[in-house]
Image 1 (cartoon, helix red, strand yellow):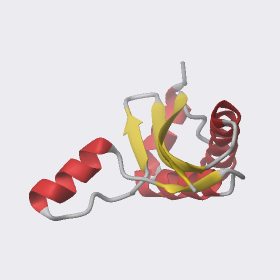
Image 2 (cartoon, rainbow, N blue to C red):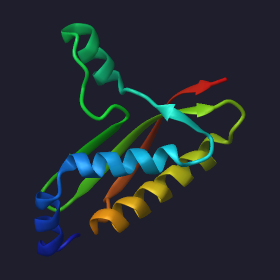
Image 3 (cartoon, helix red, strand yellow):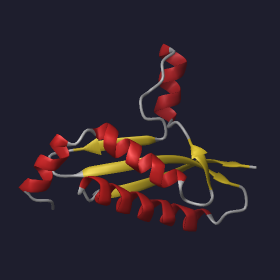
Length: 115
């Protein structure tokens, strides 16, 4: 578990910074076509007509942990498990380097395949 210093760091750093850093890292992985909305983001758009902030990336934080969910569309023909692994590594590394926060988990949700 993370210590008190990391807990204070998470509180000081905007989730938006983490979200943007994670999105940029994910989009830099070969085989990622684009980021996608989650099911709940799509439902929010349909019901309320408004976009959810941070399309394709969801940040969940508790007292001492940060979990990142990435929703992607991958290119046709790629090895999905390999691309997912590379996204996880890229996101963990980028977020750690940019914010000094090590995510507890980076979950990859493949929403579709692009031709």
